[in-house]
Length: 176
Image 1 (cartoon, one colour):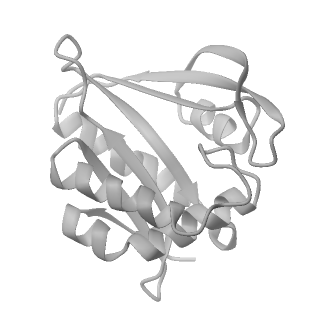
Image 2 (cartoon, rainbow, N blue to C red):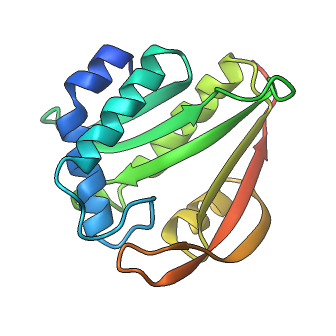
């Protein structure tokens, strides 16, 4: 599958909230622990993406989207830059989501590389993220050179309610 990675502005994100919600819905229904529980309440994913779009428009985050050859969204990732005053050098990586129809094709890596390039361009030198311990995502981060900071047992719940451990990772960047 050929994909294009694009950074969405606030208006794009708002206009594509339904498509973004479809990716989120697919990930949660597929068992991904990304902050939502099953069954997903009607309109909850769309409301989440409208809040993200507002954050993008306010300059609090950058949103990256992967589009397939037909222009359909198949993945997303956010760089959260709204940090406390004493952390202007840092950003959080949030909501790495790839639709099940598009997995295992390098899309997550492409999204992450685009995000890292944007972080460098913004002068960010420390990136932080968390993911389910032992997940496919954790293996991706480790393969791409992210450093494990540690695990927290029973940190979150899977969409079906089962507790899961979370691993925190960080990456040091050299500014552009």
